[in-house]
Structure formats: structure tokens, C-alpha cells
Image (cartoon, rainbow, N blue to C red):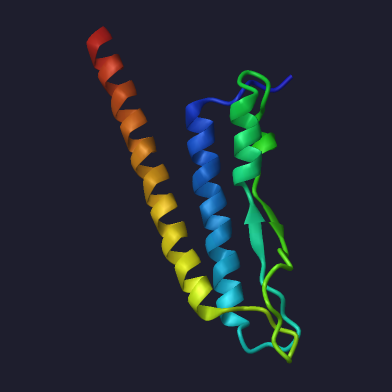
Length: 120
């Protein structure tokens, strides 16, 4: 049986999810003029929430990001639904989330190093 998820697992999953989301946003932006292209996004926050609601039961595989097409944005006449302003906003939010995960990870490792130093 797999081990339960630690805070480090959660932070790693968050960084991975934001990396996948970064690629999705880049794909959306690159395909803004592609007829019939529908924007993609990732599902992560829902899986993270479930993992946090069931501490000790969730595993790292329970919080893997999943790429999907939201299909909830207006479609232009060419069948494309990418909005550049929205994607730029998503890019900024994504960057801030990634930075937050990295800083939290750094803080956690600083705490671990401090605990090790106290024992030595």
C-alpha cells in the first residue's frame, strides 16, 4: 500500500501541476488563431482539496494534474475559444502559484535543516 501524502508531496504536486498548466496556457496562446482549437486547462485544485479532506488516506497519485477542455468560454466564428487577455491573466496567476509553492518548499527544507542541526 502507498504511503500517505506529506506536505512535501503536496508541494511537489503543486509545482508539477503549475508546470503542466504553464504548458497548457502556452498551447492555448500558440493556437489563438487555429480554427477549431478549444482551450485546455488542468484539474488539480479539486484533487488537492479531496486529498486535504482525507488526511492519511490520500496518496501522491490522487493529486496528479489532469488536462481537460473546459468548454465554458465563448466560441468565435472559426470555432476557437481562446481569449488572449484571459490567458495572460492565467499566466500571471500560474506564475504566482508556482512561486508560492517553491517558497513554501524552501521554508519546509529550512525547517528540516534546522531540526537536523539541533540534533547534531
